[in-house]
Length: 397
Ligand SMILES: *Cc1c(COP(=O)(O)O)cnc(C)c1O
Image (tube, rainbow, N blue to C red):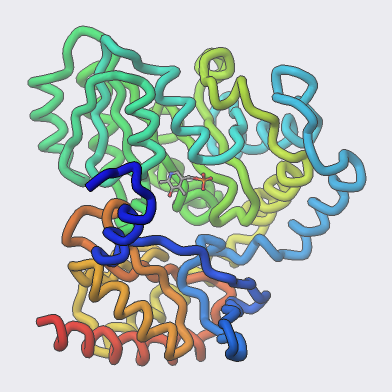
């Protein structure tokens, strides 16, 4: 098929049940979504698709911090950080992030995507090698592609496989190991201590992406690197401000020299406008809240455990994972779409995740639990999900 024929390309995707579409949604304050429909009243849906795990995007203190910064600094930063865009809210947030994560220094990026496509090519090039967990996020793979380094993919969360590959293919150049701490589609955790041991033994650098862990794990809520006592031993830790922190943008923490190096090397940092100052102020307030109120994440963990128990009681025997992200593996894209559509009719919104976001044959419903969902809603949703899942499975067996 002619790949440059958009109509034919879209028709093919339609047939494979992998075509993507934007939905006319509104997010309501209590964990509900309003979906506009043509010629029909809007649907109200319980939202199991958001990454706003702590509900901070609407927290009064976060909103007030953004509003105050908006009044002080206006909307846009007006320039890249290295030009005239380096404003007090950026510097304050970087200082806070460095202390929180237990590193000497921090650097903000426009988004997690921009961070990964900037950091990785800054660290390795054509003569070097990257060892990447197979299930790493698309932004990591795009960073690897831009770097032009040899890419070696190890089996998901398998340090023995990584060790074998390191022995065979470490080479003489720079070597970078990249992993996520909590995987975005399975909700499982990387064996970080093993990765640290291997990177030390084989003289590599280790970059850990804490997109889905930042704000949630560890005594201070800064992530899994903190929880496992590995702050400082992982060379570079990045994460987004757009998920549990409820804002936008991303951070990298590392040693001071490394941060200075990345600031001079990462093209997605150098050649991009600085984060809007109000967004940096909002993220600052969000980090302060996470530090001051561990109850926020305790409430999330209690609700995630409650929801998983109810899913089990509703007959779901699948592996539900150890985090706030719950994968309901379906297999093929078609049934995953069917399941999502059936649940939507029942008042539940959960994103069907299909290839190429996940491997072929691993299409799923990704359920994420957020703190603002009530126990009644979670209990009701578990029953509906159990019934719909059983039906789809029976039909496609
Ligand atoms: C979401 C995500 C990103 C991208 O972060 P954004 O701030 O949304 O661009 C990067 N890595 C992982 C693992 C993610 O889940």
